[in-house]
Length: 71
Image 1 (cartoon, rainbow, N blue to C red):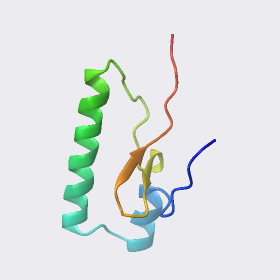
Image 2 (image 1 turned 60 degrees about the vertical axis):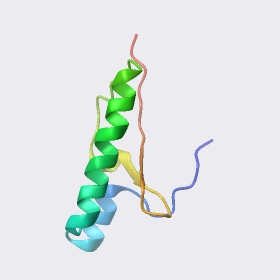
Image 3 (image 1 turned 120 degrees about the vertical axis):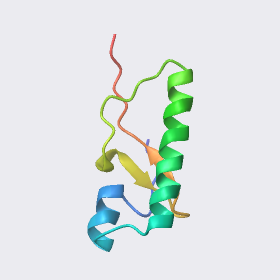
Image 4 (image 1 turned 90 degrees about the vertical axis):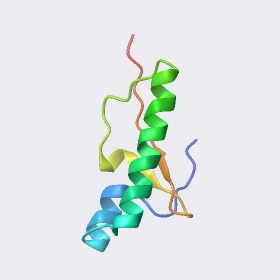
């Protein structure tokens, strides 16, 4: 079961606002980098990172989704 994420995807937010304010862009860039660092430290690689796979929570933080398992 998936959690409901109120503000949709990053791509939806970009379309809605036409452009993201600089402060919010910096926040999202930092959150994405920290998340990818954590994943890589744990041997996980996200091979499909794009705005459609980044969800925006109700408090405007990110959640990265769409992980595929490769053997």
